[in-house]
Length: 186
Image 1 (cartoon, rainbow, N blue to C red):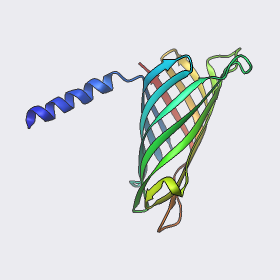
Image 2 (image 1 turned 180 degrees about the vertical axis):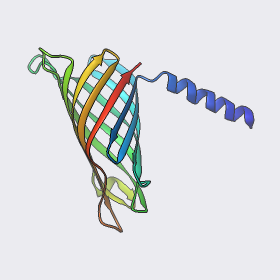
Image 3 (image 1 turned 45 degrees about the vertical axis):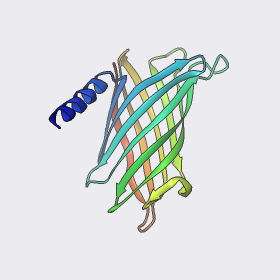
């Protein structure tokens, strides 16, 4: 039994050392940690697997994992990258727990004259039909300004709102407000 546990632990450590991105951001009452790794790249764009944890002061929180496909929009809009994604999530708030399968979109604009600067917007939504447990809907919106300090490190400041619709209680806000963060690329 000890051999199996050791093998699983070594596999987990090996997997985490091959990370493409590690993203940490902190708000007044919440902290978010994200891990992302590339799944592939072809002429149509690039795919990324990501997993995250959002922890709110008091014990509420959310874990999620998903896939995001992005690509540059093209010559008609230089500096604009867009993408679509899907993520599964499990959340806990107000002593209720549930999950959802959310669809989302992402856009990043980086002016051609200032490539190190970026403006990012993101939204994920899950209606009642794809929510389960005590959750009957989910919406997450994010907007941020970012600056590439080094080729492997980007710092940012933004605003995030994560809202849960609950079956047996009034809706809960997991996070709403400003946050600062850093994304490291390996």
